[in-house]
Image (cartoon, rainbow, N blue to C red; front, top):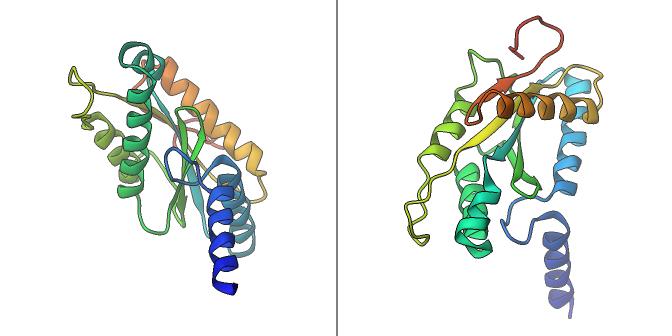
Length: 186
């Protein structure tokens, strides 16, 4: 009986913390991670950064290929993100076709963000053999590094604004956002 209850608890925790479609962390757990990392950063001074990612023109995938194909794209994309981040980093589904990656103990700047560039590159190279028509996708990304004492909402807002700037700049690109500087570096 104890084993059965322990198994149920594990299943409930998984359902509460993970997105059912993509099997990565859900938005609620993503915010828990951000709040935990903020508290750690405020105590220790260790940096962290977030990258908001939106699959470009995702509606066209659903409209052209159907929602099942859209699900395949989301699952494959989430798996690809997980495979291309460090073991200490986190990826969560923010909503729809939006994802957030939390880079632990790392301050992303335009010149040192090979990890973010790698995510953009692997996205461009993704293929979906089970979807007819040689479907390819791109993504837009907005990156911001945590500033001591900043709220999680403010950090997410900066990253989200950077994401919208990437969309406005023609998509399939990365924008770094840090209002402390005149440049886009963060």
